[in-house]
Length: 577
Image 1 (cartoon, rainbow, N blue to C red):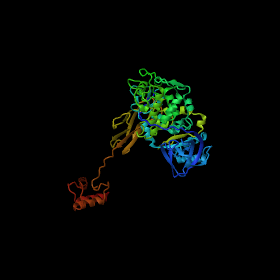
Image 2 (cartoon, rainbow, N blue to C red):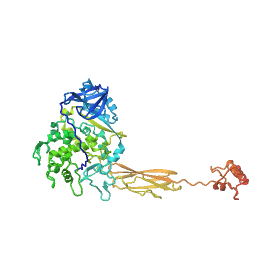
Image 3 (cartoon, one colour):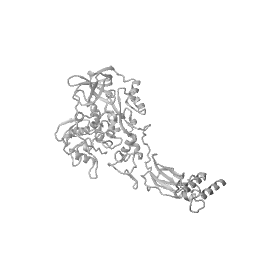
Image 4 (cartoon, helix red, strand yellow):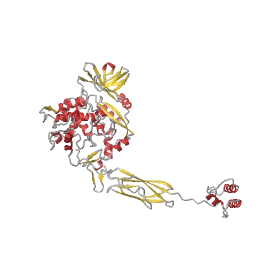
């Protein structure tokens, strides 16, 4: 089981109690100077943004507030929420979705890179009422990837392809030849599989796109019947009796109650429990963990293995604690599901991590920085849950307006990051690296990629020796290397059985040959000229100064002084050459 280590605080959310109908993706225009966009239909709901006069609004649905006044759920750029219909002028029915030209313009205005657009065009053709919002993270792709590759932050099962498993420092025992189990049978994920699951473009199809669906509760289309579809054929398909209160509930209604109290989509909640507990349930959801009988933890909160306790035991240990905010202790199924949902909603949805993708890859700062606040360690967990979400929706829901927040990084690769398929391992380390006739600095270590070396001027070439650590790895760049005077950069590349490469760099500096200046070359320009004779005369007349080396070269007759005789001797030598 994957560890799900969470830490949050509570927030309550108002649930809509009004009739909501589809607006068939109508278009409208704002008629107010500034119009507040709210989280629900009514002025009592929190403000989520504003729109201005003349802004084009996509109307996702219409509803009424408690007084019967009409409100629209709208989308405008990155803003989605509810506005009073009194300040919206309808401009088109939009029943067939926007035109191709309109959609092209929309994608450009949203800021989607060109590499996203082919997949979005296909989705738009399949689902013309779906809304695609470019979520500009403001995060550098390479920085984010480096952070996500920290050992332990992303895991795969030990039975996964070798190319999916990391061989970075701390992930693999090179002496024993095995991957460290970081959470039971789960090991560190490789950079290549992390890149694949991090790249949003790989999941722009009508199934996996649900990892980008906004996970906030929306009663306009999230219904109990949809929850029942998710829970069908599982241990949660029917009803249950609370062991402590003897009250009877259906699981579907429990998840609807949880959504209303937490502000989290009931489809997301039901799907997450199904994924974590399995079709038949796990001990922590059945109340059968030894020593913790009749304690429940449906969301596996704080359920991580230790040296003395299993993940299920740790989860139920947490379920036994007291915290009224989360309805703890969780002595029945209802309290675990509803309380755990509040726990989840406060910890993620209200911190801006309101999609499956952002809960897996923490790329928004909800007050706790980036990268650390991640719900699951399984690198593909969000993809699995996306499938469950898609399967939960009826065709009517899938044909309606749905919003997807699709992340866009800074400096993304031009091409999609491929999924590793090789059964070969990622051992692209060198076993040894050396340069003939000299030493490298620092001392060779397989985890260190950059080195320096120095050779004397008379050394015109060296031999670079390198041997791979992996039995099936190949090395290029070794052998005889010619050297020019000054710095020479030598790159040695080790290619693993999986095809991934690691490059070691050696900067070899060849010293310049020492130059001996001839007698009489006072100014050191390598030539004997009248200028050198003039320098001798000026020195003799006290008009200039010469250093000790210059004085030695100026003393043509070797009598220990520089005078007119030395100047005449030099001029004679010049005339004879």
